[in-house]
Amino acid sequence: MTSYAETYAAWKADPEAWWMEQARAIHWDSFPTRALDDTASPIYNWFGDGITNTCYNAVDRHAEGGRADQAALIWDSPVTGQKKTITYAELKDQCARLAGALKAQGVETGDRVIIYMPMVPEAVVAMLACARIGAIHSVVFGGFASAELATRIDDAKPKAIIAGSCGIEPSRTVAYKPLLDGAIDLAAHKPEFCIIFQREQLRADLIAGRDLDWDEVQEDVTPADCVPVRGDHPCYILYTSGTTGQPKGVVRATGGHLVALNWTMKAVYNVDPGEVFWAASDVGWVVGHSYICYAPLIHGNTSVVFEGKPVGTPDAGTFWRVIEEHGVKSFFTAPTAFRAVRREDPDATFLQNHDLSGLRAIYLAGERADPSTIEWLQDKTGKPVYDHWWQTETGFPMVANPVGIEPLPVKIGSPTVPMPGYDVRILGEDGQELPAGELGAIAVKLPLPPGTLPGLWNAEERFKSAYLNAFPGYYETGDAGRKDEDGYIWIMARTDDVINVAGHRLSTGLMEEVLATHPDVAECAVVGVADDLKGQLPMGFLTLTRGVNRDHAEICRECVQLVRDKIGPVAAFKLAVVVERLPKTRSGKTLRATMAKLADGDTVKVPATIDDPAILDELRERIADLGYPKT
Ligand code: COA
Ligand code: AMP
View (cartoon, rainbow, N blue to C red):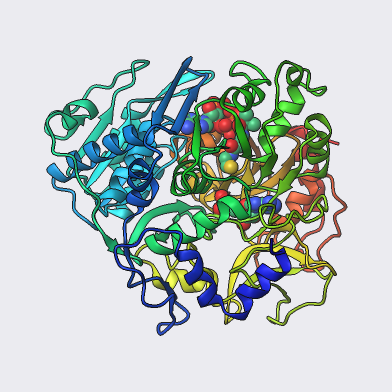
């Protein structure tokens, strides 16, 4: 067995040869003649001239290669009381039929298809069916409201939209269809047709001439074969939050995606083909793309599709039940989920009813994993708990514990070490590398590895300005952190206005744009404040238009509702307060970091550039009205 150091050194010595070797684990109709095309540097193209198909690699080759009767997906839905197992052979049939229906309706290779669905196996089938015919899917998380869906429709310009009739939240059934109809009304671009998956919990009214029923559209269709595409053909677009209200359409190219994800299943998650893997996330996020849908299937594993919450569906023992019942070997979720479990069941009494002997390890990512949650989890389960760090843009871990190669000692609070493909550097403001131990911007030396974003959808300049221009020759991750003497990376905070709420990446800039549309709001600022459960929560500060004399509480309630209506419940925007003025520098820059510190109860050094220090006292009082700081 090789060690991590040997593996990383082998990659570094000859990255292209190393990735070509990993590419051999994938089926290619035509093997790429070379790994990397860097002629358009700093835009890179991996495996561009290879010919392959994502759905073939994820489904057909297993169905044809001895795994026909193995479970590909296990759907476990405590919110509906339903469960279902889908074998690789069945998954192939379902993907081929839906792909056939899309084709029959005119969807061709390169067309975009938006998918707006809850956590049902049909969502995975929809993703794979698109990939099967080379259509580029863009999944939109169900917790986003119409306006956000409309933004994505206008950017991706889909020929079709596939949606579920409803999602099931523990407290309510969320009708997706009115949100979809609202989004299509708002959007300038109109899809040619929609396919609606009707759920028995709430069926939707279909619009004649536009909406097609999921079952009916597949009746009597000719199943579609896999369409071979180039390695650089986009498999999907996934929108993620940036500093502005306009989300970034992260593009994932076919070839690198297959190669990189396949490699991680053993090296990082330590599972062999045939074993059960579970990522408790949602297909609307990158974790769901990579580790509910694609990677486990590409690698020949069984993937659990879970429709529920860590608590309340029905209780804090749900995770343990699913792990035992389905024989999960590796489990991945966001730290928030375990903070919720711990809050409900601090002594982990539910664990006593479950046999977790088959589980090897628990993986955490998506947000900072606080040491106390990791320690609690280690202590209660007796399992290794591995933090790892990555982002929508990269699609797979940048920094992780390479457990399947060689488990490295865990340093609680660090996601461990860079994976092959990632030359992670800590840079100062001048772009120079900082010595071990010093805090700086985390950047990755270009080229990024296969599987990471080759660009943003139709936005090359934005791609460069958002990620490549700050430090020429590097990809800027947007996170700050440090590297220690052993080469372990420590992630500290975002360097931009992105916040992380319950593992969901949200833009405070977007929330400010929405709040600014309230007629009584003159100026506003949204900051992330620390929260014991969700990691961070957004808090909004509003100043009112001159002459507005209405009840402040009423205006705040309207603003909370406005964000919920425009962005969606996932924004979790519930804290808003009216202030006389926002704290600003003499040059007019809003001091958001100072406001966040006040709300967190951190020591605030009065910024030398503040135009009026007295303003901080008023802020403290208003923040106290919201019950902050918490400690
Ligand atoms: N469709 C519609 N609404 C949705 C939704 C969906 N797919 N997902 C979430 N929402 C709604 C919720 O109902 C909630 O609405 P509310 O304000 O009316 O209560 C809101 O969006 C926030 O949802 P959520 O973040 O799930 O918070 P919660 O308070 O309902 O649950 C936790 C708290 C901790 C249980 C939950 O955040 C959780 O499971 N976190 C795990 C994080 C995770 O899996 N992250 C994925 C990235 S790895
Ligand atoms: P997303 O693109 O939604 O996956 O969010 C990515 C961002 O989440 C990263 O840029 C980090 O800010 C944060 N993040 C993800 N994983 C971790 C982790 N293990 N530790 C700290 N922050 C993390």
